[in-house]
Length: 96
Image (cartoon, rainbow, N blue to C red; front, side):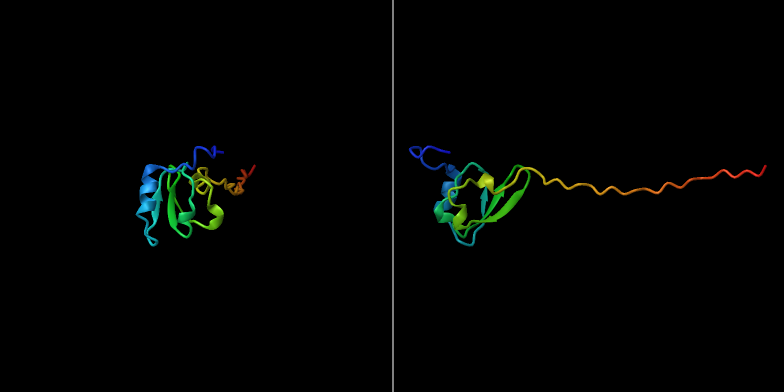
């Protein structure tokens, strides 16, 4: 947790976007370490996780968290379904 004497961390680019904020504009956020501020409540954001963007609508419960907590970086594991292959048994029938 960041020290209260240091304050909240927000990148300059994100701070510039917050100052020039339009409610219908979708914010594109590359800094996962930035803190979610109260002025962003109700705002639609796209948070980059290094691979793709995740769409997030900021609610009052998100305030104080980091943007990185809202965009997972790992893929969810999906077990593969194993299909049993029926082996056909060839019988060698020789007339003796």
